[in-house]
Length: 332
Image 1 (cartoon, rainbow, N blue to C red):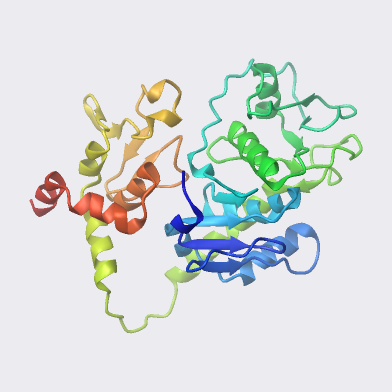
Image 2 (cartoon, one colour; image 1 turned 45 degrees about the horizontal axis):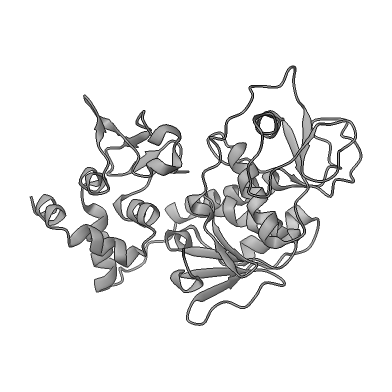
């Protein structure tokens, strides 16, 4: 179980608890306008960059379900699930695995709208999660296949965050899909794009993801400046990240598919149904790899170790470089 002091960067918003001493803290303060625009404006003015998310980041949640709005923007900008601190506990969402919950098949016909949580909604199916986050196969089908989903979360930040991540993971396709944040009192929806169903968290997630893409595109056309000497620490991290990722995968207990060196069993087998019996990780020529189930994007050796073993980047570099087998492979 991680502690707050295990993180490098903490992100706060209005009402969040103070960041732990010695850890960099960034404030995500909403701007003006409607809640979607103001949240994305707050993200843009926060100074956060895609590079910040190469380190271990945690969201310090204020009390109440309103915390889901800035948290959604943070996940969209990061391109992955971000750990959170709520109710005095660290929630390790980066390790969450719920999308393989069995369902009862697609509902008959086209399910336009549904609701999870709260009292029964008028005119649309309403399902619930158990207190431990599980759901019946019938409920999973509704959550997974509804074109639009309203979510009525618990009043606590802890419960609301857990519910959001489970629902988003169940609805995952290539990425987590976020629901509408609902009070459960909205009128019955009349169209697929009905704007009166609460806060469209998926719209916020996608807007934050676009902001990340724009920042990356801007950096590609940035002005060339004189080089800055690389620190010993960064040089060590770079050396570790150049080690053949196939060597690193074997150290993690992974193996390639027979006769296919490009596809490997994911080293996070506990996140897969049947332990990743059918290899889901692709190894690319640029020394990166991506599991279709666990990763939002391709990862180099260093990030892979950080995610699989829960280490800091410096610890991951030690794991890679101070192994006899790895050193020999790297030297060869």
